[in-house]
Length: 333
Image (tube, rainbow, N blue to C red; front, side, top):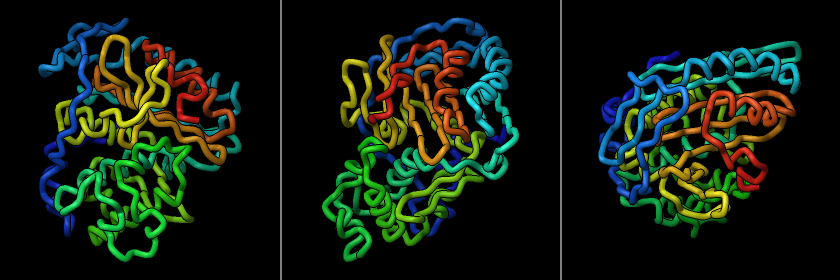
């Protein structure tokens, strides 16, 4: 597993990027209340630690469940005809587990990354929050004011970053995401990938670009896992993390599904939310999940038409939490 970067590193690295403030976002959006301390099956008691006034429970991934997942994945890969598969598990303690599986017919190897455009939204949200700190604009400033007279954003000149980042990915026009990215680049004087390197230094091997009319992301499970790790280590009280996990819209209140900033949210019965994002396109199906209540995260990246079915079969093996996000429509479609 790659070395995980702490929130303090976020602060130090900001000074290295021209035009970007040296302080990570201090935008304070109200925290989602109700995080109650809750145990989970197969905890390791020595690693269960209550942190902060929110009574968030830190729980490492179960070794028994990791073993069950590792044992089952080759069979699931064959069952669902998934040529390439990569998994990364991260937690507060820096402990984790990652594995890649490739087979005949695989085109995208984990070493070179998977196309994962849907997972670009959380990164784009983090970049917007960080970049806005050194500028006279914020989440509710129209793009036309962020980048005046910029031709590429004119169709969305009246749109605000908060509107574009809280729209479900599969309902959001590609041109809208491109307009936001173009506004960020124009306002900071840096290309999207340079912004990623400077503002989210935990992501070291991913490529984030405006290309072919959309925001394109190529990433690995370990690299995106490092991003999740940085959010976990920053903690739920961090203003930027709180902003990402604040509910801005409802997807399906009956099932507890909401829309956060760049993330979809699943409210948990015991309190708190789980942030997740699906990426489904052109034979690549991925899931990123961030559980701030238990302070852990996971990434599944797959190549194959039935990759989502594999993920839905594999997730209950590692995560004891029942998830409404697994049912169709959990991604806003």
